[in-house]
Length: 406
Image (cartoon, rainbow, N blue to C red; front, side, top):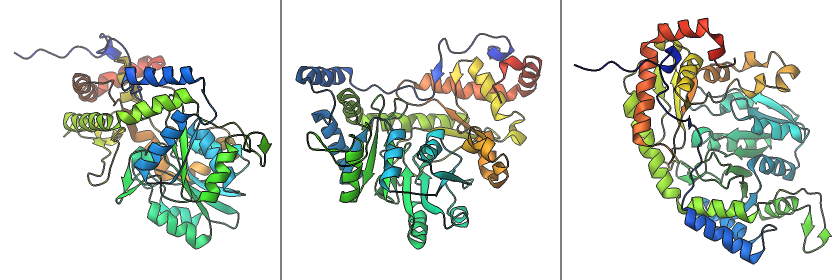
């Protein structure tokens, strides 16, 4: 006789996991190699200012992406700001609202005006047809975001940018190690910016990189990350401190060494989730291309409340009770965050697909810190929660403190 499953934690049972299982738990790589690189840097006493580890990291990024000019920076947000300033933009920049807030903040921080554009409901990326409708005489650039590592219509956006004389930037925070139609991401548009934050599959603790193919632009950007210095004590332009340090580069190099193993683990995990959730009505995993290179880092599901009978947020609250700290990316959309929602409270009406996705998407844990048994547990929990939807909804209605903040 089959045993009955243990009661759900949100219904009074014990959490399935003894400690939190997070989205974005860092991949560490070979600790001995990491500490060896750090020891070497300490012995050299060269800890920042374009040290040998940073130079090696930039060289290896260039080899992987096929892009000649790679400029390592302290983080991707600073990289976006330096990149935007380096292109000498004015006026308006067309951006998605369905992205991490840093994308939009980088535009506003420089005194530019972000113009929110809706996304394609299938790709979750900027919809080129909607982009073209938003171009005005004040538009100076388009900023696409390669969500989940999937190319953001780069060919179509390059054509639009060329037609209207606009700059094209890509926030490639999700897309290191990925390709689009056989071409490595990092090589599109005027420039692209990678993130190597601790939550990314290749990480530098904190870090990022700007990639471009134009030597003159690369020279300006490199001066900008070091106060405008050229040579030892000569300042020739405005700049800030955006440099990557040697410890971050040490972590980045160690991550690059483990990159193939991490990708293989991510891919295997993604397929375990796919198999574990197969046939579950109302839960659809966002697919990856099997022909392009992928990092397989993002396990993203669309939750159709009309079919599951349970909202994404209620499912998420029940998972959190089990100590599965899944995420609702990108809720509620940048346009619904400050200062943007106060500047234009009605902008959401022009972003219907962004609104729908922000209420439907659920991201599940992946990476080298989760094993197959934990993935099976996560899938089993999702099935159990949906099967007990009525009890879960009643519990949340009785105890609103258990629900996620709306």
